[in-house]
Each structure stands twice: as structure tokens, then as C-alpha cells.
View 1: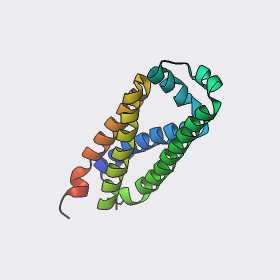
View 2 (view 1 turned 60 degrees about the vertical axis):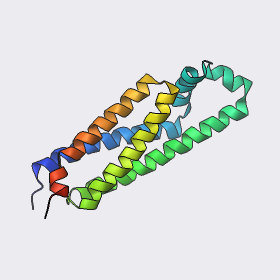
View 3 (view 1 turned 120 degrees about the vertical axis):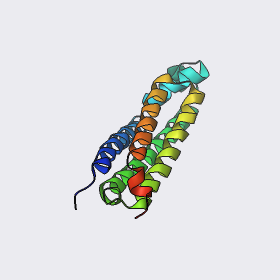
Length: 148
């Protein structure tokens, strides 16, 4: 059975969105200071290096939290890839809801944090992820949610 064009297009869009999330999570997991240094400066008005020198234990705690959040995002993105490559391609209704729920929770959670941090670069990346998500879910909505 040939996959409908709407599913194929949506799959590619959601794959790009998931890869973006995967890279974001991976970077936060392996190099948490990449995100923390910029966000810390914007939120606190203090250099991350100065804070690292003045309070290394607290700075390490912040890095551990960022690493854990990145690892969780990375793991969820891998789960999303499995769903995309299996159930989503088969147009299983639950896959559409899974991608919608997990992605919305993930992206909006990170968006709220970065709005608080006043981090425009990361906010832009997150908005791109959300736009890809919305487009990727709207295109095949009729296929997934219509009567069978």
C-alpha cells in the first residue's frame, strides 16, 4: 500500500522538527554550558564565568540540571523517531496524538523557560520547532482524525 502524499510531506516536516529537538537535547546533554552561559548572562546580568569562579558548586548544580533536561529531551526525541518511522507512517491514530502531545509539552516547556531567560536565539529555534510541529500535524490531520 502506497503512503498518501500528505503523510509523506508531514513525515518529512516532523522528521526535521524531531532532528532539531534531537540536536537541541544532545547539545544540552553533552555541553550544557553552551546554553547555560548565554541564558545565565541574560537572566542574571552576570557573566557565567564570574559565577563559575564565585560559586563553583552552585554552577555545577545548574550544569547538572541542564544536562538532565537535555538528556530527557534527547530520549524523548529518540522515542519520537521510533513513532514517526513506525506507527505514524502506518497512519495509526495514536501516533498523531503521541507526536502532538509529547512535542507540544516539550517545546512549550522549553519556550517558557527561555522566555524567562530572555534568550532570543533559543526562543527562535523553539518557535521554528513549534511551527514545524503545527504544519506537520495539520497537513495529515484529516488522514488521522477522519472517519475510517
